[in-house]
Image 1 (cartoon, rainbow over the protein chains, first blue to last red):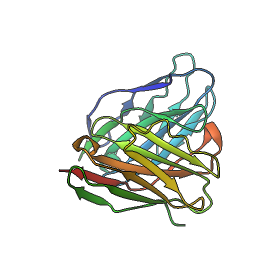
Image 2 (cartoon, chains in turn brown, cyan):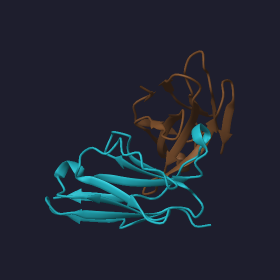
Image 3 (cartoon, helix red, strand yellow):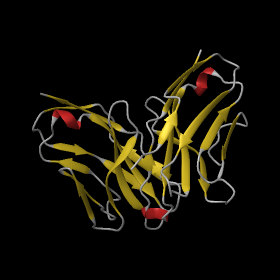
Length: 110
Length: 115
């Protein structure tokens, strides 16, 4: 079946550091790929998505590129802020019910 | 506009009692999902409603769990005879049902604690 694997957290960084959160997936066909973010005390919200190979999703300084050859969708940001502290979920969808990774907690210190 | 709302935000109950969790989706969203989020376990799919079609109940963990959606809008998740392992955050999401490119819109969740 479909699966999403994310790097385990927490990831702890200083403000303005470079961020990478790895995500790889297993799925047949051509899924869409997503990153959702969950801020403390809130539900998940879409951060970015890509619907076909080589597409790059971007939002709020975050980027991720859909790499079919490596089945990956790594999340990157060039300079993190304290306000980016949250849990990040990678997900894939081939139809109506998506599959989520376990989430990666990011903690950014001033 | 208004987002997805859930109530109550927190629920503490005793083992063996029944609980009802409510979800109000975004107006016009025909798809509605329930998930369970346990510490360190990510999101576990429970049930999916789409319009007037029969719901996909494939994720419900036992027959103690049930859900209904009235009038294509509000949904209620019911857990009967609660157990301590039911303690988790229950998230509701709605969407426009656009298939694999669909963006889900989540509510803030209901934190259930079973003593």
